[in-house]
Image (cartoon, rainbow, N blue to C red; front, top):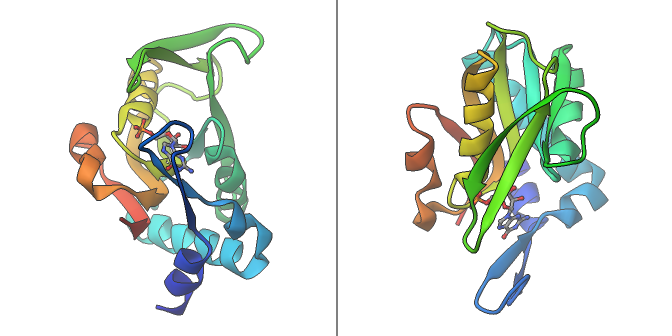
Length: 176
Ligand code: 5GP
């Protein structure tokens, strides 16, 4: 489809970033091209309207989930909440630790960001191993929110992140 073509043409690759051996997919050109950004939000909106009609909140992941999530939430007429790296959010928070390729990280959300029983859709720019989105799913579980599904612009298929997130579903626009 034309929209998908425009989006994939707006993603570029940088070898050896942030460390040697990693091929980093850079989504910044999507934001530079308003038609490409609109295409991303159009396709996410269409998917959520068809598959998750009862979504009550979009939850975006630090940091590039924040670029797409609020735009989508506005389209859907619902709210947006942030999952951040530890230590960035004021007030009472809940956190979960998770493993990175090297070392550990913590994902955190404000205690009152999502309500118990609320139906949420998670969003990030890219799915690699699934560790980050999986941590966000655990946070939602702690808060007794119900994850309807996950959205990403890019999915790195070889890393099998979608398997890690099961039974939650992943919808991606571009796959490598
Ligand atoms: P995972 O936890 O699935 O292994 O990694 C996904 C997280 O790392 C996402 O939050 C994503 O923003 C970031 N990430 C990892 N690799 C890349 C990449 O090649 N490009 C971009 N844009 N983000 C990446």
